[in-house]
Image (cartoon, rainbow, N blue to C red; front, side):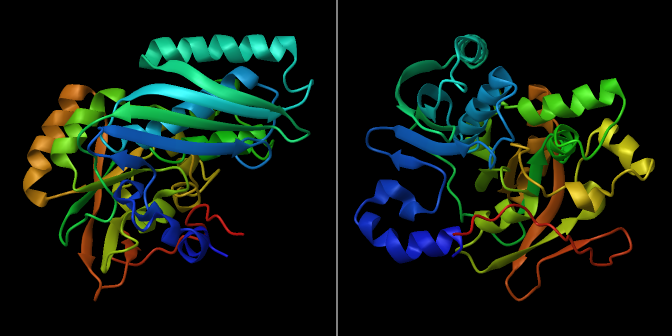
Length: 319
């Protein structure tokens, strides 16, 4: 059963009288009267991260991905809670020191504070992070409009290459290996973008499951489609090198997830101010497509106006 089918069939009715739940169709809970925004995510070893060889880096990745849920809603994160399950090997003194040190670094970097949590003994290693922020407004899903431009921050695909290297399915030079692995473990989170997004974006989401998977989630309750321009989907200079050397195809890596870039739509009239605002913030932003009426088929097209088919549109949670 697909994630949204499961939620709709078994849990949606439980939140039907609670507007703050946003119909269980967004990444956050939003109580407007209390200006309270909450995000919860669970990460399991072997599913969301390969193993625990690098505990300090794994915890950074987990915390940043949780922060990203609030940032893409236009909210600055303030507090976080961690619940963890594991065993003596996972939570050895050495590993705990590395986890604590990394969390301290992240707290200083993002001005957030550990505020509680729980620990449970288990053979399976997992973390659940709750992140809290405060705002009287958020950018909700399913607010796109026909002819909206589609934008994405940063670059896509680097994290996927980093994962392939960690799985020993790809081996590059030491410099490139380090670059891509860092992109996997330490995604760029643009905390300075939250307020600006509130005034510019009609709808937004962070790219965790993949460009196409998350774009379709972004408009899943609207009768809309999209066109993406393949050449405009941004990749880094290092990934371009691999593509030019034919070590990998662009279409193979642009929608594999774990990018944690912000995907958003905005009115065409705001294109100039978006370009200038992101330039002022020092954040790369790319216009990659547009929202279309449902009468048109969703597609990705190349420079010759030919349709490109992606074998992998991203990660879909099935049960």
